[in-house]
Amino acid sequence: MCTGLSYTTRDHYFGRNLDLEFSYNETVTITPRNFPFEFRKAAALATHHAIIGMATIADGYPLYYDATNEKGLSMAGLNFPENADYKPEAVDKTNITPFEFIPWILGQFETVDEVRAALLSLNLVKIDFSDTFPLSPLHWIISDRTTSITVESVKDGLRVYDNPVGVLTNNPTFDIQSFNLNNYMHLSRNPPETNFSDELEFDVYSRGMGAIGLPGDLSSASRFVKAAFTKMNSVSGDSESESISQFLQILGSVAQQRGCVEVSPGKYEITIYSSCCNTDKGVYYYTTYENSQVSGVDMHKEDLDGNALAAYPLVKGQQVHMQN
Ligand SMILES: C[C@H](CCC(=O)NCCS(=O)(=O)O)[C@H]1CC[C@H]2[C@@H]3CC[C@@H]4C[C@H](O)CC[C@]4(C)[C@H]3C[C@H](O)[C@]12C
Image (tube, rainbow, N blue to C red):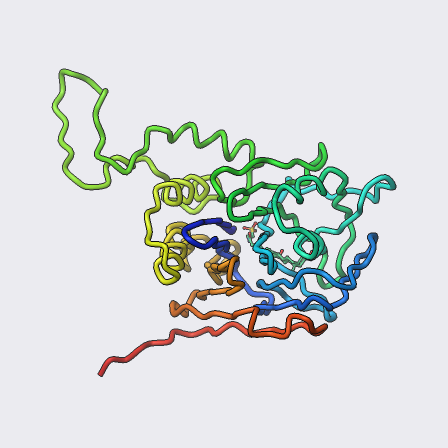
């Protein structure tokens, strides 16, 4: 399971938790403007916006999980099993495979409004990257600094939802995830006031009681509510340090600790990495399960007019700052 997040202070920040029981050797990958992007069923992009994000590089191709382009548009793919339904090629549409979706969108567009227009004629075509990397069932959050949408290719077709929360987790479909928030409208950051009964006496015996009932389990429906509540009530300063700290704290509220979710005997899902990209500055920050120190890669320190990918292996293992 995973959680994606968009958050704006002075700058805009976008990132996600990747929750899984293994890793695909992902690296922080920068695609410069002249890396030739070829598509299985659509015209190639010889030049395009530069992109930074987390990717597995396979046969020289960046398979992005989440990324941001130099214009500040961002996108992340999250697991969507049973619901994702990719289509045969459609002659009257632009046919993009799910693994090409992030490069195709981030390569060309600057705003969510431009993306919405492009999605009208888009078909997510069912073509595997390779035998080693068959298609995964995904849905996507796409954000600029003011707006987020969720894109789901389901049996009925391509669905595009407004996402005013700026959060995405996994199943069920986004309409149901959003509707489910109604069940939590009584939650508050403030102490509760009771409507329970005039005949009983109630005591606000602890701070935080206004949000009793906020789910704390790791299911995707519960993480959606938890992350939404945490984000919508979030208060932070707007410096870079305060912003990325707060962003990672929000993701931390739905992080997975090894042992709490067994996916097969002896295999446990963990938050492999948490990312936070400053989309205005093109700096991709991340922590890993065992490295709580924030590492960063700045796309503007690379030759963005080049044609070769740059890949930074994740710094894993705790970096302890000894003080004596
Ligand atoms: C598994 C991950 C979601 C994490 C998650 O939700 N785990 C719960 C599993 S469970 O539902 O609880 O069992 C997702 C998120 C992004 C994905 C990559 C996207 C690029 C590329 C697309 C290609 O088409 C296939 C290979 C590819 C490298 C993808 C592999 C994998 O699919 C990634 C890592």
